[in-house]
Amino acid sequence: MQNRVFSQELIKQVIDDLKITNLENATIGEVLLIASRLEQVTGIPFIRMDQGVPGLKPCQIGLEAEKKALDAGVASMYPAAEGIPVLKNEAARFVKAFLDVNISPVSCIPVTGSVAGSFGSFIVCNQYDEKKDTVLFIDPGFPIQKSQLKVLGINYLEFDIHYFRGEKLKEKLEDILQAGNISSIVYSNPNNPAWICLTESELKIIGELATKYGVIILEDLAYFGMDFRTDFGHPFESPYVPTVAKYTENYILMLSSSKIFSYAGQRAAVVCVSDKLFSLKSEALAKRYSGAGIFGPTFVGAILYMITSGITHTTQYGYAAMLKAASDGDFNFVEETSEYARRAHRMKESFKKYGFHVVYDKDIDRDISDGFFFTIGYQDMSCGELMQELLYYGISSIALSTTGSEQQGVRACCSRMSEDLYDVLDNRLKAFSIDH
Image 1 (cartoon, rainbow, N blue to C red):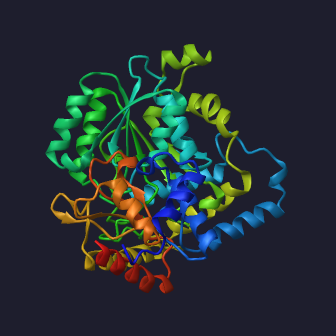
Image 2: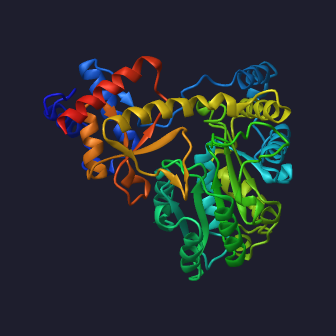
């Protein structure tokens, strides 16, 4: 392996120093630490494909609105637990503008990022019905959500959708749901890490089964509108972003500002609970919290408020302004984020040139979109082997095994690529190919 950027001894030393016992199961944070430590020790830059952080400038509209809110003195006031009216109104309007779904502002709840939103959602979904105590993941997915369930002590099941596209998905879901213990189903769309997108027929299957079995769908829309095969950037006109909310009233949508507005640092998101679910009365919730047991108010007052005491006041004004600009047609977030598709395409071309392949490459019979993430495999290498081998060549990634995938490969994120790094990536992949 004469063309390695970093020696096997140095990689092992760093892994040992960081007390990482199993590289194949390393978390995103651990891989980030490995790459950062190697950069510090050697001064050699990494191709950073590990952490999914925005690679674009934050939306100026949000920044200006936050400054205005600060000048108005809102920093001295606690925000209402249910969120400020302007953000709730704009969230409901945004859902109508880009999903063509009607929802009341009261059912749109600001949260401190979708991570806080999913954490609270897992709690309420597994408490509203005492017979339902297990979460089902349609994988691959975001590893942190399973870590949240470990913290909460909640059971979960999972399956890799790679084998169950189209009508096969219905058979798989029905087989699991018949047991009667599933409280909720979680997936991201577009998918982190595979970037596959569920089709309308698949969303219909999920929605109809959710209604049939009384299951709540947690639809993570962190990469909202970023299936760049279709232009979803025009408010109040077709095509609309596909959603399970068209096919069931048992849903919680998670809308994050992190990627579509490059606003990750401000931890701003909204969870949109269907109006029917928001007003659902649960005897189990009433008993546990000594209240009326209404789903929405219990979710807000007894659960979310206990986690973060509400979302930062000024951030709510920033998020509201960005949602309004999008719904007004003054800010095309899809056009802005399409830069990720261009980066992913160039990176994929380099990988393919040197013998790599895209692992999740199809939405049934259609090539997946280029976007924020993609998946890469190499010959018969396992997830852990490929991730470690790429580290020797100064390329950091995440093993697909940590995402619930049963496929062999790694997740690649394109967000931190810049023009000066494409040649570096190409040269390192060429070196990898020569050595293998």
